Length: 140
Image (cartoon, rainbow, N blue to C red; front, side, top):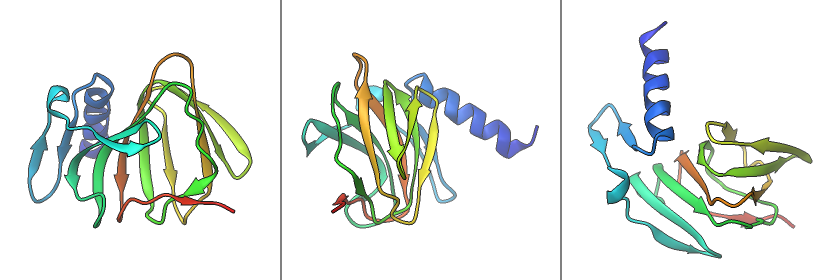
């Protein structure tokens, strides 16, 4: 097993257990779950940034969708990489529906249109790495 692979498994395990950890080449950031600062994004969606600035550039953050939320088809200008930490969703990309549970990973790049529906009785929490400012652009 390579070091990179071992680190991926370690960080994924910590995230799935509710202990957010982030390390970068410039600094190490550790944020306990109790220290996350959630902000309202509208429609019951909340975000908890852990590094970077969601509005200005690359960032890493948690995003929480409430039970029952169905997003309209939309895209984001920034490529982003997502791990589902808790809850269950149906993610629809290019007309194909994917049923995802905790631990699932997906990458949405090149402004890929997508929609999501929170399934079950638990909020969906995602950990997202965005390569640029975070925005939501509705599809026509």
